[in-house]
Image (spheres, helix red, strand yellow):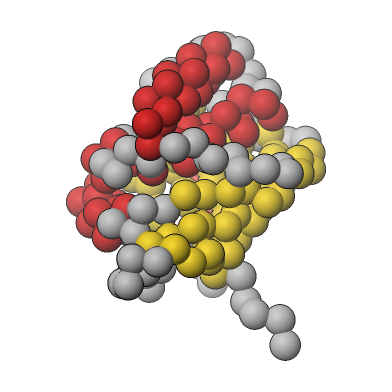
Length: 186
């Protein structure tokens, strides 16, 4: 599997040091923010990210969880361009409800245009944060999405996620995002 070896070594080169792992359990909705308060939540999240993500200062586990909160809050805006702004130009997205790998901004915007039409609201159930030096981090776990179906009714979908973040030019961006449905237990 050359691509797997390449991706791992690329991540290792980008991240530098191996990190520390912490298990964080969230008992309530991480993005239980109504659209009317999404802008306020985003401003608060952005301020926290700026405070924890300045050049030369290592990010904290709290800072990493704030990055996920910001992503979740931005979903509530319904604006696929704003969501795509959270991703690096060469980011990789393996999305929850699409089989197509997205590797460029146009693909991200296309996916999020369709996904945001379902008015997603994310609730993080559990996550594991790994700090990979001062310029990279990984956040993996399980989240539930409340989505509007074709009949306009809300349904819940459980998914596993991994976000890989990197500080690029002083800004924390998602460089890789994988989300897949949790398999039904048999």
